[in-house]
Length: 157
Image (cartoon, rainbow, N blue to C red; front, side, top):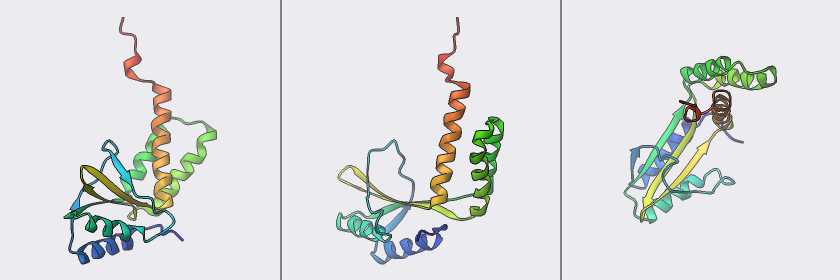
């Protein structure tokens, strides 16, 4: 069963990484960098294999980043949903956003990464609520783009 808070997972990762004599670099590997995503969804301890792979590759450190859901994050999402005046059929998104208040202060996402021969390898762990949160953010962004369009398409003539 997946946890709804990755604080203890993050603590275990820190201890495991340090136990292997490696250092941690606070940093997030962005999507605009070419990466290889670790596939270990079926094994909840696959991050340990990832750390051991980094050590075997001679990586001196791993990047480590986590996301804690802040009250402001939920408030901003709710404000965006209200500002867009979504129709009643989209009320489920509003309810889902309101439900996220239950996860304020919890870690929903942890990313580990290391570089080897010019390639960045990444391992990500996420809670179900964090994945729903990301989906809502994308939904709001897509809806906003549909309603307001792209500024580059305006006729300036």
